[in-house]
Each structure stands twice: as structure tokens, then as C-alpha cells.
Image (tube, rainbow over all chains, first blue to last red; front, top):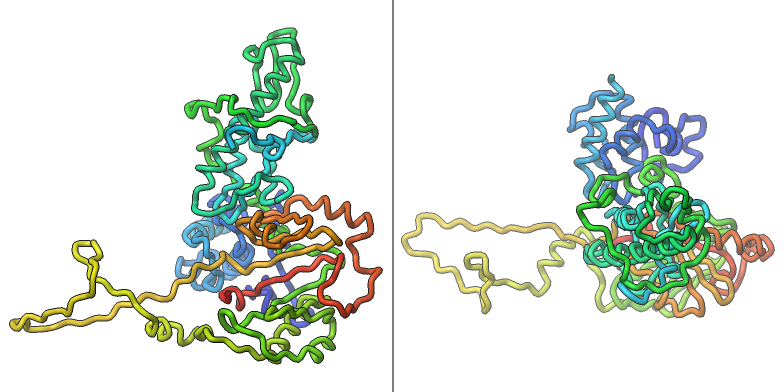
Length: 106
Length: 396
């Protein structure tokens, strides 16, 4: 989730630690009817298989694009390094984030 | 399942103008449910929007199908193709009878069957919506020729893709049933380890702990809340003593440990491994220089795609289990209960929970009418979830 603009894994935080802070989770980004551009890009690139890591990937990508709307591939790899996809969708995730970046900058 | 299969275990025409496909195959990211829905939609001549899939439910699937070996399309795909073409044949015959025409005169479009001018039309849902086929498959339906395919072979969105992208509840870890309690298993330190000593009293008195479960060398704990179960399991682990003839190596020493194992070495000549001992390498006397190198690759684990979880609900003679299983029928067999329904839903949909709602309204699902703390192991009539955290998933 995004806490005051920074992507952090929620499993490492207790509720008390986010008191008074601004929190955005995957559920708060967009809906099936109205997807966030990052979610739209993940759909367009089919950048998910089992989907277990996808929520974290999308939230981390959103935080990255907020700070750096045109990240280099190395920036994307670095920021998403903690999100392991065992299905092997990593190259599609890269494509999706590049696509979302173009969409946001446009 | 080409012939003699109960068609109702494979397909159901719903009143809501949809078609449900039942399969024991489970989704593990390979897209099998989407592919099977495409095959069924193709044979039935309906759009993908009409297809629903119930996966890995032992109450609604053919026995014996498990999701292994990358052969689901070959086996289940073919079976679904046959069953769906049989179903289409049956529906066409029913429509022909209803409209007093021959099946050959019918035009089918997205589940709607129309006869020649003036003969009217009837739909799949008019004919069998909410009803059973009450037929066995015959293998007499003619699958569509590949050249006429409209849906198979064309890209479609993965079913439930948008749910996954928007954080909807799609995994067993997301399942929260009313009154649900939480379990954690304390893993032994090695294969065939024996639990020698365990002091349970202090753990039993921790906040929220409902029961410490010990059965031989199986050790676990049930608590009201997840973090209480995690803390209690850690306390149990610390107070347990085990003896093991085969302790597992710790992660830091894994590579050294592997080197210490019995190895297999063989000479490879032109890509073919040779039998017999590896001969000593003869260094020619005229060699100016000798190079030596050691190559290694990291330990590879045949691991699950992610942390697993299971939910169980006991109600006297009945146990419902939702687990990340690729073989729900074996799971059901392993439990040895009178009536057990297992659902795979491997990191996918939670499927049909309606039978849970029925039971809740009958007053058997909640926990409010029972004391918060019980002395007997296990908790009857309460749903319980046990998660295997990321730190435990590489245990056995």
C-alpha cells in the first residue's frame, strides 16, 4: 500500500503505525468499471498470471509513477524488486508500466 | 469421458441465461479455466460473456481429474469439447421438437434457436434454464470443425482478470467467514522428527488462544484472531523439543550441505552421458597450461507459487474444505470423513459460497452461541482458516 506517498508492504505494518497518515491500497485505486491507468495497462498487457503478486506490483508502480512519471527500465526494476512473480510475468509487467507511463504523461 | 458421463456434472444451463461449466481443473495462473470456457462456448455457440466456471469443487465435478503435467487442454479440453457438443445436440433436438421442425432447419445464435419463417424460436434457457440434462454423454454430438472456430484460438481476457487487478477477494487468504477462527501449524525441524517435550499451559493461557492441538508429533494452535495464532505458534515452537534423525540444513549452509551428499558424476561425450566411473583426466606432458574451474548453480526448489492457506468448516458429519490443492479428490480421500466437499480454487475464485449462506441462516455457522474458550482440541461448527506464511512455505 502507499503510505504518505511511499509504497510499503502492508504485512510489515500494524494498523497503529499508519495512524494519521494517508493510506492508499489496491482497493482504493480503481474499480472494475473505472480502472486506474496502471490497472488498465496491466489488463492491456495481460501482465498477470496467478495474480498473487499483482496487487503489490500495481500499487508499487503507482507510487513510482507519482514520483517519476517517466521511469527508466532500471528504475522500474529497482522499485519492484521486492515483488516476486513466480509465474514469470516480469517482462509483461515492465511493458505494462511503460504503457501506463505513456498514458499518464500524455 | 467421451461416453456415459453424467452431463449434469459438466454443464448446467442457468435460468439467468448463462451456462456454468464444472471442472476439477484449478486455475494456477495458466489460464485453464478461461481456455475450457472458450472450448465450451465454441461448441455451444454462445458468447464468452455467457460462460461461468465452477472449478475444483468435489460436489460438482467429475472424479479423478487433477491439474498436473501441463496436459489439461489435451485431456479436459477434449472432454469438455465432447460434452459441450453433446449438450448442443440435445438442445437442438429439444428445440426441434418444441418448434415442430427438424434440427437441421434450426439457426442457432448465442443460445437462441430459430426455425424457418413462421415457426418461431426458442432459447437454451427456455428449454433447460435451471433444469438438469438427466442424460449421459453419448459422443454423438459432432464437435465443430476447426476451420469454423469463432472463439477458440482467438485472444480473450482471462476470466476474473479485472478482479485480480482491483484487489477483489480472489484468494483463500481473503476468505473471512463470520465467526472464523485461525489456526497455525508448528512445523517440525526435519523429516520424521518426533515431538518429545511440549509445555502447552503457558500458550493455552495466551490471549485469544482457543486450543493447542497435539496429535502425536503434529502440533498446532487455534486462536480467535490471526495474529494471536501467529504469536501462539511461535511460543509453542520455542517451548517444543524435537528429536530428528534427519535434521534439515539451515539455509545459510545449504550449499555446503548439498556438496556433502552422495553425488552422481558421469562423463559426457558428444552430449551423451557415459556409464561407468569418470576416468581420471590425463594431462598431456606437453601441456603449457592447465585450467581448472568449478561450476555451480543455486539450489532450486519445486515450490508453490505463493504462500498457501486453507479454510475448513466442520458441521458434525460434514466437513467443507477450501484449499490450494491441485487435486481436490485426493484431498477429499485423505480426510476420510463421512461427507467432505473440497474446493481447489488455487489462488483463484472462491467459487460458490451459497451453501455456506444456507447453513449460516440455519444457525449452524456462527460461534456467538458457544463459549469463547473450549478445552477440547479443535473447534466444532466454526469455520477456521490456517495460513502458511512465506517464512514457512519452504518447509515440508
